[in-house]
Amino acid sequence: MLYFAKWKIAVILAVCLLGLAFTAPNFMSSQTRQSIPDWLPNQSINLGLDLQGGSHLLLQIDSEAVLRDRMTDLAEAMRNDLGDIRPRIRRSGFQIGDRSVSFQVRDTERMDEVREVLRGLVTQIGGGLAVGAGGPDLQITADGNRFIATLTEAGEKARLAAAVQQSIEIVRRRVDETGVNEPTIQRQGEDRIIIQLPGVEDPDRIKRLLGRTAKMTFHLVDLSADPNADRLPPGTMRVFEERDGAEIPWAVRKKVEVSGEHLVDAQPNYQDGRPVVAFRFDAIGARRFGQITSQNVGRPFAIILDDKVVSAPRIESAILQGSGIITGGFSVQEANDLAVLLRAGALPAPLTILEERTVGPDLGRDSVAAGETAAVIGFAAVVVFMFLAYGPVFGVAANTALITNLFLIFGALSALQATLTLPGIAGIVLTIGMAVDANVLVFERIREELSNGRSPFNAVEAGYQRALTTIVDANVTTGFAAAVLFAMGSGPVRGFAVTLFLGIVCSMFTAILLSRMIIAFWLRRKRPNVLTV
Image 1 (tube, rainbow, N blue to C red):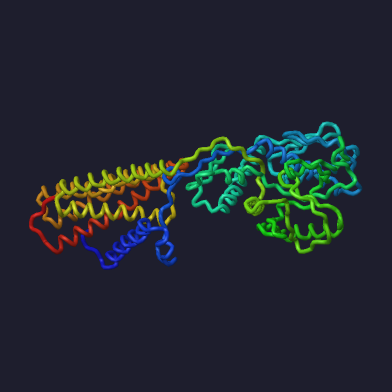
Image 2: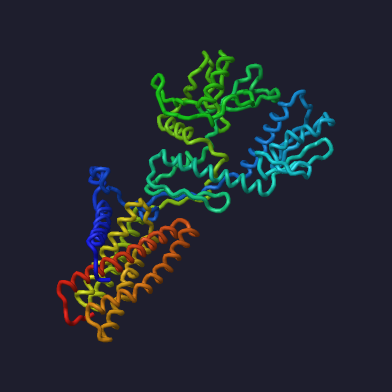
């Protein structure tokens, strides 16, 4: 136990130096860190919301809107699939509810054909199992010549879970576009999302970005309809454009000619000295956009964003390259934000802000100062105790391991780019006390061996051998607890678990290897006849 091969010594020293190297950037200014080459450690620990200050938002997804969209998509899919049958099946009375879609089949002798078509959309048709792309979220029953598709409870949960996950990804893309460093975006419950934005003191812009669905569609304007009429022709809808503080009505066709889901890029630009947004479609969207513009030259083409007409430019010529420009009297900031929204994609449903909190940087600085004070006091108390309890040799070895342990923890946090929170600081303070547990076990065991008459070398070797099992058991059980906290907890609890787990790993390394190596070197050099612990 007291013999160290050269390669072991090299590995121990290398790990210690790496911990020091990754910790060092935390004590440098941001300008100094930026001047360090990329191949060298140059990253500092990210401070969480409670330490740096910032904004906390709790959002809720509109679950009813998610289910309505599901039913609308289902009805459209039914219309399309049934419309592809030749000769055409006569049907009527499509009714879309919150969780159901129903329609009547006039050609009752062709009911079996309808059932066959719907097999690709549902799992049950009149009690019979059917396999299709719709998954186990729909059930269809037949009441005479009327088919009723109902969304099951499992279907509701699956659809809502998918919408929440999609919303999280889109929210993350929108927030990342604003340059916020290390945001925390995670799900809470079934339909809520927590967003923590460290360093953001004014969340108004973020709220504007998150409060918009950003669902963009392109529709042809119905020139034959009067947008001010009480009733519009079938297939036409009234949409308003906000212009100079007034709402201008437009009569547009309900059919979506091109959907915003085919957008691949959107960038702010200038046209005639005014801010605009330039967009570009993918191959499918470009082909569709080219067909529509080729067939409707001279006709207004409305761009609708979140049920509002942004602009309705006249098609001057066919646009075959799959790109265009959105004008709307934007300011520079509005053009930038709209480009961010379009690049990030549309939310599957609106998000409502349920809770908003702003943490000032002064409170964060107070928390950091309090954490530093607690760490310094705890560290000093442990150092003094170890020195007084175990003398200059073993006390210095334990304290050296303790200092190295702190460097390794902060180095690991920096390398992992982890976010340090106030509970994380609590975990570090706790680790300071736990870091010497292994040394205490070893040193007490060495005392027992010395009292039994063993020589200094044999006592030290036996002390490390016999205490090793206890050390491993104690730290492994604590590691399991930290792993459970990380897996089951969220936010601050995870921060505590991360620092606790890192502290356990680093303390095992410093206690079992580093302090033992220091004591072994001292023993081989001094070769004392009497050992005092």
